[in-house]
Amino acid sequence: MVISICQAVVTYVPLLWFVRVTDGMPDPAQRDLLMRQEAFRQTGGQVALTATEQKLDAYLHHLKEKEMSAAQFPPAIHFFKAKPLIQKSSIFKMLQKMPKGAALHIHSSSLVSVEWLVKNVTYRPHCYICFTWDNSVRFLFSDRQPFPRWDCFYWQLLETLRAKIGDPTGFDNSLMQHLTLFTDDPDGEYPNQDVVWEKFEKAFIAAAGLITHAPVLRDYYYKGLGELQLDNIMYLELRSGLSRTYELDGTIHDKGWCLKTFQEVTKKFIEDHPDFLGARIIISVHRALSVSAVKAAVKEAIQLQKAFPDIVAGFDMVGRENSVGTLWYFREALSLPAEMGVTLPYFFHAGETDDEGTDVDQNLLDALLFNTTRIGHGYALAHHPLAKELSRKRNVAVELCPISNQVLKLVSDLRNHPAAVLMSEGHPMVISSDDPALFGTTGLSYDFYQAFVGIGGLKANLGTLKELAVNSIRYSSLPPHLKNTGYAMWQNKWDAFIVDHS
Ligand SMILES: *[C@@H]1O[C@H](CO)[C@@H](O)[C@H](O)[C@H]1NC(C)=O
Ligand SMILES: *[C@@H]1O[C@H](CO)[C@@H](O)[C@H](O)[C@H]1NC(C)=O
Ligand SMILES: [Zn+2]
Image (cartoon, rainbow, N blue to C red; front, side, top):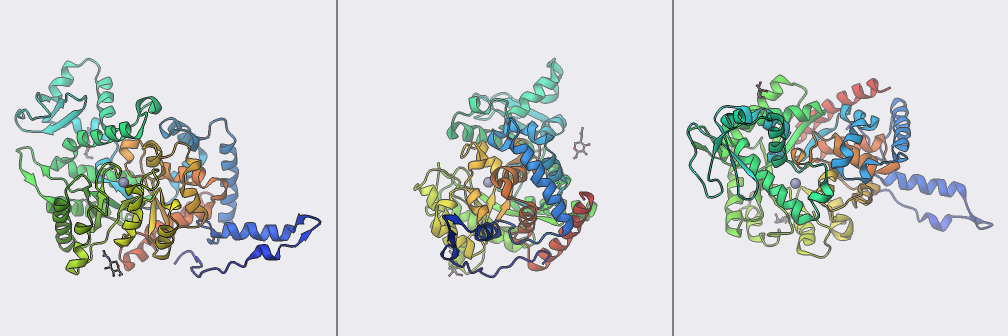
């Protein structure tokens, strides 16, 4: 291991018993000790920094103080407004260069920037568009005029439409608006969680016609890995429903085809970029399905994992937790692997809510009872002492996606994010971006910025960043030998990063 983190349980001496009070004044030496003890517990608190690293850490601290005292503090305002400020931040620029390890919580339909989807994919031949009655769009690649559908009466060839439209840039921008949540007026457009989730689901559906075209999917995966690699990320675990893909003549491919394509593209990407470690898939199904449909999906996932053991990491359920089935509701389906005596690792979204005491809130404990490997979001975890203890004891990491939580309106000022509690006690944790294309981010640097500057505050230091990066390999689904390869690759990159910044 590169970082010597003392895993042993530290015995916390009941210090306060020893605090000597002289003339009402607490002992400064004891005070100092208590402060160091507390710092020791936080994420990265036990990471030993080299002399060079300490110098960089001091510089980062100085930069952070400056950003915190500026008129506008980016983590305190909505990301859509904060983004241009963050792009100017020296800390952010450093985070972009920093080797961040792995992205463990990203959804496949939001992996690649919408700019590329519009400027590249919609300009390909045979791309049809249709404007729906509910002010959304659908895309379809077809070698003939597509038939009307229930949601789409009139398909137009984009090439023809663009030729008729005077303002192609304006038109392309309007297409992008359909594919992302990003807007200049987030508070006006998204007054509450329901509205923002509705737009969220709409954007997914709009993008589907582009992404599920077989030749596009290949390029899409490749481009997605490229965007991550540019942000100094070396490994990906992608949540995907493995939607059916289609060819120009209407031929449909199944989930196996999708996994095989993903495998081939990843292999090609590694050939072209030998410092990239790889990518795996977490098969995900929507919570809106029935119990019997989820049962079938679990069985299918078991089969697919058998057929693609290197690629399939496990299983998850996606969609807004509030609106539809809880994990307990699907208990019969989720118990199937254990009943059948097979292993299907779970990577459940759980506790992505600020409504305490609801069924959704309960998902956290249920995720742990179903032996989840990690917890997606775990936003509510800080309020569940028992679930928190279990997750810590079993080393079940929380996948913290700060910008997602803010855009989906769980918290507005990220300094108030409950993960501040988890970070202060060094809870197992990784940083991820959830739906980068929808939120207008790329890679992990924006979310690292929010976690490091906003949630971690002045306490978070270079040791914190180092531990978060190493955690992303440690808590990945990779087998031990590949984790070791990953640690070694990461350490090399890290050493180079430190040299560059000293
Ligand atoms: C679109 O993307 C593909 C694959 O990434 C690339 O080969 C091609 O040059 C791009 N085309 C345009 C017009 O940017
Ligand atoms: C969870 O793990 C425990 C201990 O290994 C095992 O007994 C139990 O059957 C597992 N539960 C499920 C639902 O997989
Ligand atoms: Zn998610």
